Image (cartoon, rainbow, N blue to C red; front, side, top):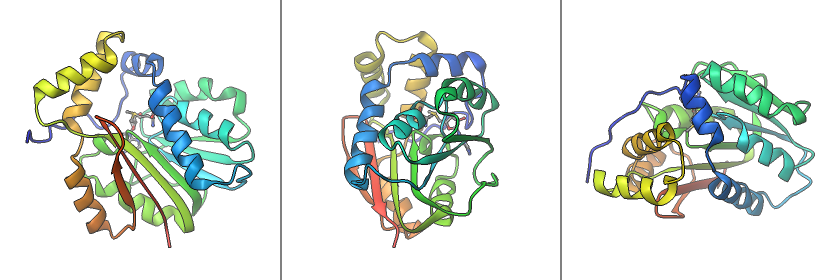
Length: 219
Ligand SMILES: C[S@@+](CC[C@H](N)C(=O)[O-])C[C@H]1O[C@@H](n2cnc3c(N)ncnc32)[C@H](O)[C@@H]1O
């Protein structure tokens, strides 16, 4: 199995932000929301959610539409991402609060949340416990947690093949970032170890050839 090769933690190059924001994530992002919806099972949910590593805000907007009475605090450490998200989420700005801040240092406007979601942040973190500790600290009892990320393939060759299969139509910059993200991602076994160490009672499942979905209810 190929070792993990980290990529820069924050995505703060404006060209990279644009390439990411313009890429087609319709299928994985909608699947993320659909899985979350099954699991929250309460379309009338009127509480506060927290999106960790929100990027350009596509997941925030999908979440806000799926749960029309919810509010969302969305955090990203990249100023360029937050700027993009400000424009992108503007039509729903009364329910989405964007916060420029980096985990684990960010100071959140609220102490605890009923739903915590995070897509594609974990593989960016040098220390993955930063995500699990933040979830532990900010989840209120009974909180729903949903985390999705990429899985590291066994070899560079497999990573190249995944880029070909899923990003052949995308900009070169996006293809490069996707490749490096696959190399920076964790394996299923590594994430299992992280969860054990964090003592978070979350369930982990591989849901596609490149995605893992981690979910659970905080006691
Ligand atoms: C691959 S993007 C995912 C964006 C979004 N969740 C989505 O699914 O479209 C990862 C984001 O995490 C942010 N990030 C990385 N490390 C972070 C940290 N320690 N604190 C906050 N944001 C971080 C990056 O700046 C980037 O915008």
